[in-house]
Image 1 (cartoon, rainbow over the protein chains, first blue to last red):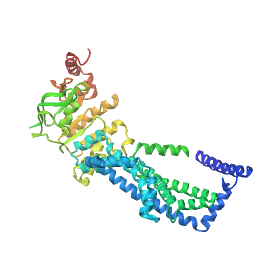
Image 2: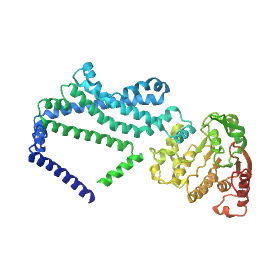
Image 3: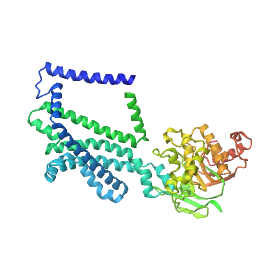
Image 4: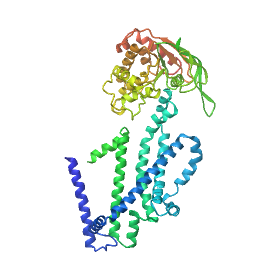
Length: 263
Length: 256
């Protein structure tokens, strides 16, 4: 009952704020190329989808983001594991990693376009670069955070190094890895969009760019709306995986508890 | 053959200004099937002793043998119970119990029934599909004991296993441990800082001095088994506790 009321309240709040936006824009006669009314945005959205334009670009951006996410986080995870497990890898690689990490990765986008062209490849690489670091850092921290008591338990059982890794260190690192994936997903989307800004033949970022040249602000708003929904859905996907994998993690249980109260 | 034979065992920890003696020339032995408690104040090196026997920590000097063979590393014929249960939260209770089987590749199939029997021995039947966080502290420690017994070790090393439990649960666990011991007849080395607990459980109590850890007394407890909790109120119980406490106050460990 309480859940129903909260949902109703949420919807009511949303509708009234959209209505207020519409009324204010009309009352003060704000020009559309500065701040369009929600009705204009809705029309732009409908037109974009009706013509098939948005689907095409959305598919392109989604593909870049997901491929970049998979590539970047897989590399981050494996390199992070190597750093955490081997003192030599850590000693020789970590300084470069730290140096590279403090660099804003999106600043590399123009270079990547020069190297890899305007096609899908360069956007995927850019997305992967941005998604790489959250996974790398979290994997290292997660694998190194193994509790001393648990280590002693495994040692007392005469467990081999690889058993300690598979049975203790890896599962122990999973909450960190999942938190890294959470961030990496959104970062990959940012990386893909920035790469499209710099130069691309398709994608929602490129669409925003070209709409901006044409002063089509309602169009830009409608693409922004799509992007935020895409971000939200991608984040939800990670959350679902997380809930499956980390059913045992206390912070995950807390989060579930909070969501139940919120509804 | 002695189950545990320790000769002149010492452990030094290097520090900035020289080294600290955690254990100094300790010698004792434990027979097969005997229940021996080691009692001492905190910081007397009890846990160090247990870690050396478990093969997790190397000794500095001296000789320690388990069933005739010198300790060179962790062994598969011992079960260790730590101060905290140390259960892995991503494993169900049954999977936690089977951890030694997985590590030592002894085959799950052959040990499923053993695990179920042990779980019912400690009163946890029906909990095998649950997860550690769903269990109370006492129940978790029972799972840890079950895990230490699953590969049928000849010997149990227990490091203040009930130290973190409340007084009532602790007494309950003492009774259960005695029951398990009477049923399974394993050699047990039980480390504790509670004198009554040591006297209640053990055949022999080794009394340790604070740093550097040394054994200052070896008390034989001649109270018949099975011992009920009321034993603690019996006239023959108090003198043991008194005698051990005396040794500590003579050393200035306890204010009398």
